Each structure stands twice: as structure tokens, then as C-alpha cells.
Amino acid sequence: MISFFYETDFKISKPRAWKNWLKESAANEGYKIGDINYIFCDDEYLLQINKEYLQHDYYTDVIGFQYSEGNVISGDIYISVERIEDNAKQNEIEFKNELARVVIHGILHFMNYKDKTDKEAKKMREMESQYISKIIDLI
Image (cartoon, rainbow, N blue to C red; front, top):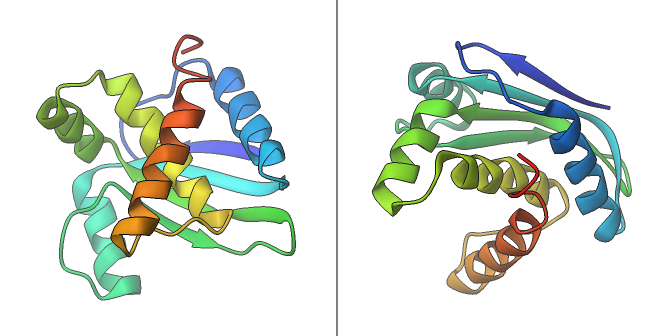
């Protein structure tokens, strides 16, 4: 089950479309959705998580904590809406495009995609783009 939670005034529109997209994306990669919680928050909320659990003292757009078993993916994905807004402006793209990128980015990590090396990051971006193209007209 995919759930959306809010620690900010932001609310995702068309949650059913997002959930169906995420389920289809996971199935396309050979995974099933267990329990995925998306928690939308602000910069300071996510900064505290970054400091407390990862010992990183900087802002980020997404942090995921995975507790998957086999091909059933589960976890908590925290997303800073403020970072998405800033990234969208900086990259001159629509907010919904950046939101879709960050939402799928978190779940791609749960499906064993990495982004630490240049090669891994390139593959991650390719996968993000592939999946974003399947939802962008629905949201």
C-alpha cells in the first residue's frame, strides 16, 4: 500500500494516479509494492532527519529508509517540497516534473538503483526520465 503523509501545507493532487504509476513502475522492474510511505515536509524537517540518521548537515530533496524483503519493496520516503520548488526553478522545469522525478527517485533506490558514481547517476537519470514520461500527462 502506498500512503501519502504531510508535515507541510502541500498536498499531492490526484493521489490515485500517483499510486497506480508507482505500482506499475515497480511491476515493470519485477517488484511488488509492500508498504511505501511518502512523507512531504519542508527543508528544516528533512535537514533534521539528515543530521540525526545520516550524520549529514545539508539540505536534500529526498531521503529514503528501506525495509524491503525480496522483491516486495517497503519503506519511508521523506521529500522536501521546498527543495523541489527550488530545484524546479533552478532547472527551469515545471514543479510537477521535479516532483515526479523525486517521487520515482526514492522508489528506484528501493529497486536497487544507485547514484553514487557517474555511471550509476546516469542510469538513475535515464530510469527517472523513462518513468516520468508515463505520468506527466496524468497529473
